[in-house]
Image (cartoon, rainbow, N blue to C red; front, side):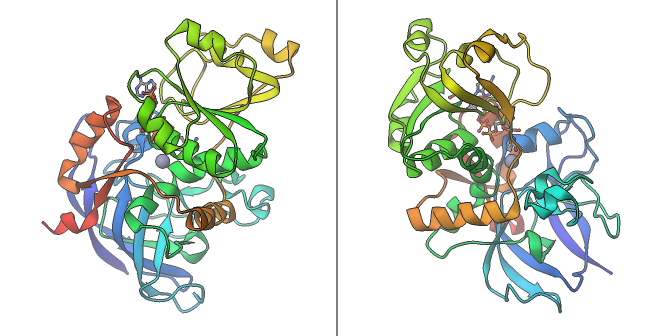
Length: 351
Ligand code: NAP
Ligand code: ZN
């Protein structure tokens, strides 16, 4: 049995997204059916829709920063009831028995976690479709509770931009004595600043864009370093415990390595692929510095982040758009012309 859903889909890497009706499975006993209210627009949606990473399956309905209300629950679901405000991020399932899953790190599932879109359901092999749509069906283990105190529009980007920056901040034990830098002030970057600041860290933004200083300070940055200015880069040397690099394209990470302190770590979350220019090992060896990577975050950790945001009054800075504006929003994101996350108001789908 299937249900009819309306959404926006990419039909190839070259074409704009257009309205599309499709089918989702009816709820299984452990499923939650969610009426989608809002969906954030992640740079990964552009990479996926345009097949930057290969493996695109069309038609593709992107969207993995989903906020909605529970419309119905399966017979075995007790954690949620009709009307609850809930969120869904980048994953909707995983094997649930491998070592990473047992550790609550479903994003690193040995069998591969099931992504919210552009993947196959592990049970019925149906294609998964994301949040640029009016309804989604998700196993209750992968549904997040949204604290009442968070504005629902600003909560949507927490499901990817929020958790992707929260997870490395927690993994590297960031707290009041830490010095953190964020590279790139976009969707991920602005959440990285807010979350690092709320954890008590001293926060620096590296940006290639002049003119982001006032916003960065308002978001919580203690200083801004223009990464294109050699003098400013030199003045930032040897100080950071953790750098989270959110830049979506190949770029030289060597200049950032010299800004790490002894034992410091640069975590790549933005660009996926071989480094060019190559990484120089000298600073790594001479000062025991590391380069690491990090993928979103586990479900328990995502709930921890949402609860933390609820307690600290943190949400994303959003620009609301109707779904009809999605293609223009992609172009604007590619020009870094967004403050700091587009969120689709799904009521516009009916227009
Ligand atoms: P975004 O909103 O577009 O922000 C990217 C920022 O990177 C820009 O605002 C810009 O900041 C900087 N940048 C530097 N060079 C750029 C260039 N040539 N083009 C565009 N931006 C450039 O993107 P996002 O949604 O934060 O996503 C960032 C990356 O993280 C994407 O590649 C996305 O796929 C990836 N991602 C990874 C994970 C994960 O789990 N690891 C999760 C979500 C997203 P300045 O102007 O301040 O320099
Ligand atoms: Zn994302």
